[in-house]
Image (cartoon, rainbow, N blue to C red; front, side, top):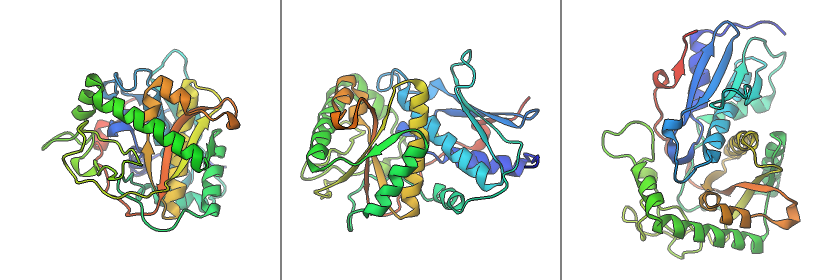
Length: 327
């Protein structure tokens, strides 16, 4: 391996890829700092773009940042580096969630690296009904393996377990829309005219399920949602469960890496995804999502998979507001 320089053009590509990651309510709770003397990028939490009511422990914030780290690692590999990623590198700095050293080149680039890098720019969460055939078993197996490479578990519940998880999600969604503090916080992140490029675009809110079988999130906390008429969603949704062995901040970060790895691999195959996070926001409902057949795992995310439109890009903060290059 040889030493590689980190120039301005490469830095822009890296950060552009990182900020394309999904984040809860599109809060984009990350900031990057370049340490030029060691060619290291620090990834820090921005607590001012957190959700203190919905996410008091910062679990979803860590997952969001972990997804950005996966994109950053993928872009670095695509550009020829052998990135060294450390999660929670300094116990004395709790807001320093990761750092990535970029000084050595990689001798090879795997074909999957380019596929995943290209998928970064086409991965968009969609909340509309899925159409088309079921996701093939071979593709689902690839998603399971993608999660495994990030030290997490992705499993595919059967129909009975899926119905149980959707019931818990529906109960969480009901509580989200009736809890005054949570509904107020959720509505506050819906973008209005001339808003900053973070938060939830009104066009991305999505309809509710006419049949009431699939509990889609209503960010406006008004049922039925006023922005779009109800729609017919799939009657047998394919849900995947992302879980970790432990439930520490480092596991939340690994969840973010795994989540984005799964989403990018799905995008490579034209599979779309939306995230069912509602039950994760209520501790007793999140605990109830555990399946004894899969051991003492902690459920971190439910992912709905299927075929549908690519979806529209979500606004992102400009690089000048998320990157600090001062030594």
